[in-house]
Amino acid sequence: MVKVSSISVKLPRSIVERIERDAKRAGLSLEEYIIELIFQSLDPGERILEYVDVTEDLLEQAMEELQKNNVKQAAGKVWNAVALAVKAYAEWRERRRLTSHGELWEYMRRMVRELGLWVREVWMYANGMHTCFYEGWCDSEDVEETLERAKKLVIEVERKVKSIK
Image 1 (cartoon, helix red, strand yellow):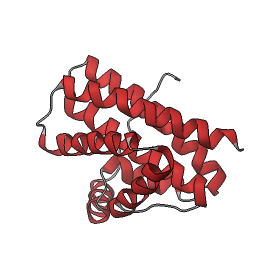
Image 2 (image 1 turned 120 degrees about the horizontal axis):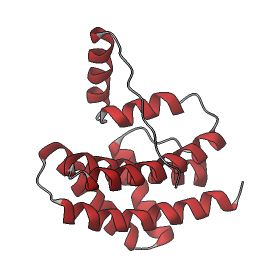
Image 3 (image 1 turned 90 degrees about the vertical axis):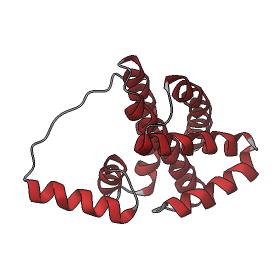
Image 4 (image 1 turned 45 degrees about the vertical axis):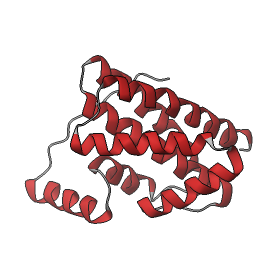
C-alpha cells in the first residue's frame, strides 16, 4: 500500500456547515460524502479503480489510527473501506452507482450470492464499526478483527475488478 498523506484545507464556516448538512441529509459521514462528490465526475472505469485505491488507503489509515489508539477513527475508516469495496463491485459488475446505505445493503446481498457467505460476515462486522464510529462502544481488538476481515473483501474485489480492465 502507498503511504497516505493528508492535507488541511481551511474553508469558510458556511461552506463547512453546508457540506456537513448535506452529508447528514444523505446519510453519509463527512468523509464518505466528500469522496462521493469527487468521484461523481469520473467515468465508471476510473471510478472503479479509484474506489479500490481508496479502500486500500483507508485500511492503511485505520491501522495508523489504531497505532495512535484512536479507535473511533479507525472504526470509521474500516467501515468506509468496506462500503467503497461494495460500491466498486457494483460499478464493476453492472455499472451501477450506489448512492445510499440501503443500496449498499441490497448489493451486499448480491455479493453474498456471487462470492459466498463470508461477505455477509465482513459486512456485519463493518456495520459494527459504523456504529462504533458514532457511538464509541468498540475497542481496538474489535477494530483489529474487523480490519482483518475487511482486507479479505478488499483483496477479492480488487482481484475481480482489475482482472478485466
